[in-house]
Length: 241
Ligand SMILES: [Zn+2]
Figure 1 (cartoon, rainbow, N blue to C red):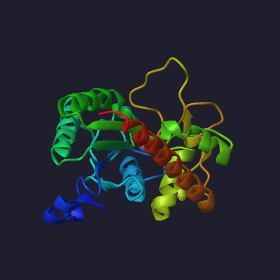
Figure 2: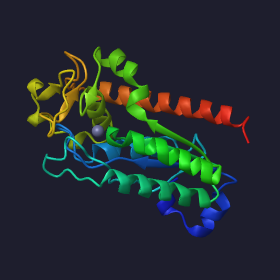
Figure 3: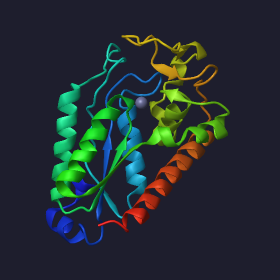
Figure 4: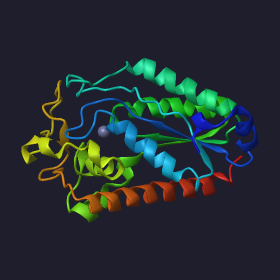
């Protein structure tokens, strides 16, 4: 159920009686190895679309401009400043709350704006008493990459690349890939611009695997994991005013 495709009169009938949750997918535009610049947008949007019915949710329009940091030097990457992003996200969530939803799930696809969501979610909850959970999906799914691929992932690495391959395989530029593209930043370094766009956070990790079946298995398991956590949060929230 996509917000943008609903008519206002339909919306009035659906929210909040039949669907009391808004899922808000958020990402950014930045270089992602052999995956597209919009990787951080495509993943949370598809996850939202596939979870919406079971969560009794409406999928809010995607916010596809975020805070891009160390990868901004790579062609086609885009960013807004941190303050602008935080204010914009806060106002979007306040406005969603005014549409009578009882819960907001932010599905975040990008690591560059974690702090901003911490503050924005608290402000929206305090102002509107709407319950808000922000999910940085890849962080609760590390063990799934390990289980399926036998190694951990990273930015544009095994896991993120697999998610895009599951959603839009034709967008993966396998022909551009070699294992030496995977960069493992040494501990203690802060580097602008980042020397790589496929970033592993451990040694001997992150390498891409282009098996279509594994990619689909991985992404299905990720959706299942995130959905299970969210349903548990919903159940626990019921005890709260
Ligand atoms: Zn990404």
